[in-house]
Image 1 (cartoon, helix red, strand yellow):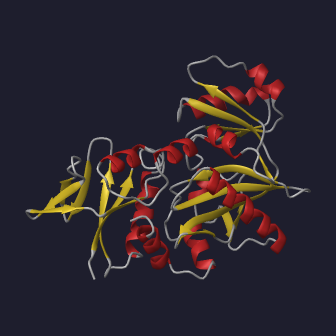
Image 2 (tube, one colour; image 1 turned 180 degrees about the horizontal axis):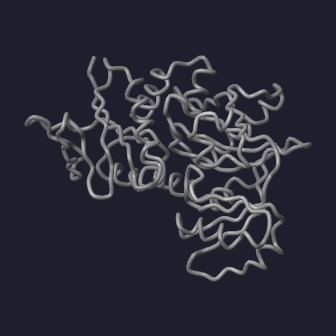
Image 3 (spheres, rainbow, N blue to C red; image 1 turned 90 degrees about the vertical axis):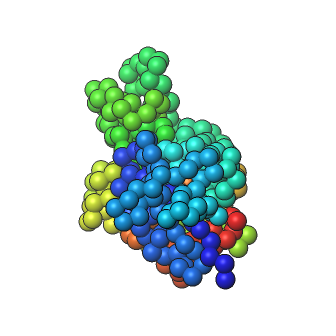
Length: 327
């Protein structure tokens, strides 16, 4: 059996750096050692490197390789687990396309578009059974009138960076007086901000992946937060939120959700593994699309690993197929 060299790309340029390292650790632990030789490559703004003991070996970006003990190692595959830029927004995908190295995620176009919440909502609009919250997009360079926002949308409102991840810079506001502070906080994270009406209902997250050439929808997770909404603290602090996998949903509802998220995956031309967050509206149980994550968290407690286990699959098989299916 030929062992393949896998570059496991972790880190990135955002506040999700540590989350990415946890994801990489779990993926590395669950990749078949007989089939794959895994090199965790840390990506920072100033350098990309591999840690060998106390040495930091820089990546040669001309051909995406490292030289260890005088031997040049070229990578057969890149497994990207960087949340946010440059691993989730198409930048790394573009580089890997140029050096002709296959990878596990969506392509450049899909990664870039799906990182932009407003663009994504526009593309998925019109899918049967899918609804989106009413919203406005604000740009840092333009003026924005608080009165217009308050008159156009119904409180409470969510204010969030349009291209951010992990709920960083996100707020929930109940009146016009709280808008300027919330908008300013979101603009600290991004030059575009989305102001969105609050949808009251049960919150879920569901993984989808193309495995053995077929789209596989994993069991959904219901997220019950003890906080006002599922923010960064609720996501990454033990005990703040409760995650139920598989979620308590009727067979009919599960079937409808599977059909909707499969259509989202196809319409956005997704590849590999993604995670879709949605809300089922109180009373009607209408499906409201929140966002799609194209490099979802992979720490042992993350939602996708939970869902893979709930589906009766093993993580080594799951991650292995994400590599084999994209080679």
